[in-house]
Length: 166
Image (cartoon, rainbow, N blue to C red; front, side, top):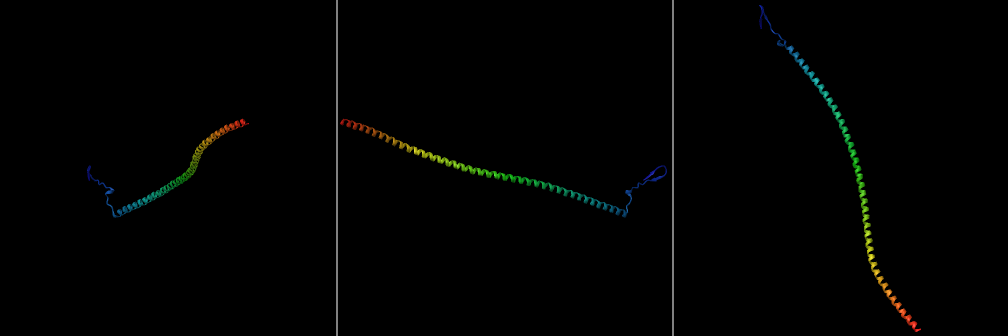
């Protein structure tokens, strides 16, 4: 571009670095720089991935520890449940023993009730027999009193005859 000023024409080229031509050596230098930057990024990324891996390993270790603690706690709870189950089994056995003894007592009570009923029947039967015997004895005593009363009458007659015969 040409600017006209007073009398001298001034050529004002804007020369910028970006507009300058690049040589092949410069391109190789840029290429090597970019490759070096890429290698650096790869190394940094590898280091970052290693750190992430380390953190994952640490986290995994912590999680394994936590899971081991949880497993241990579950084992303790399972052991406690086993103790409780054992106690329930003992209580069940005691209840069965008590039920067995109660059945024995009930058997004895039923046997006793049976014996009492049998004794009642025997007493009732004996009472019935006693009533018959009592009626027989009453009849016998009445007959004996009648016989004695006749004998007394015969004695009186014999005594009166003996007293008149004398």
